[in-house]
Image (cartoon, rainbow, N blue to C red; front, side, top):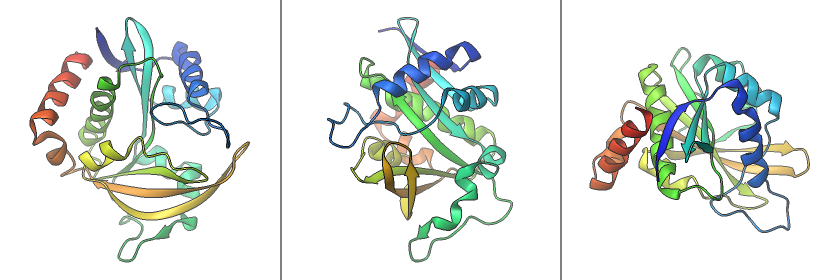
Length: 211
């Protein structure tokens, strides 16, 4: 299957929204294969695309997935960062040092019809863009309640991420949700992801898809 990665463009908003709706979640309903997404309006997707935060996956010349990462300046200006006081840090953990470039992996989404083989190259390409931008830490959250969404955990572990805290938020239509907060040191994150035969194959595949 021919696939490629590219930065998202304004006309892609509709495709991102369509994938989000396929991966939507309502309590009491079956969980979509491969996880699900919460939140994010078309307007927000448009803002993130304009800011260069979105990478899309194309399969058969159609958008089959996307990755959204927030670089330091956008993360620190976001509602997420404004709510950081609700984070319950694990013992020995806390806010990153002032002035240290940090980033947040906001969303990784593949359409239910997309090839699962392309999830890792998409995530790796997004993380590498952050590393090239000089970021030192990557944060991400995974839903724990009212239902667990473990789809991203294997990739987070591959990037060397560890759980550093927990936060509680409210999503319209869902209610209170509890998420685990993970952190990966980007100066070393690629080592566990690449120092295996499978990791090397993923890196080569990501480079070819982004060419």
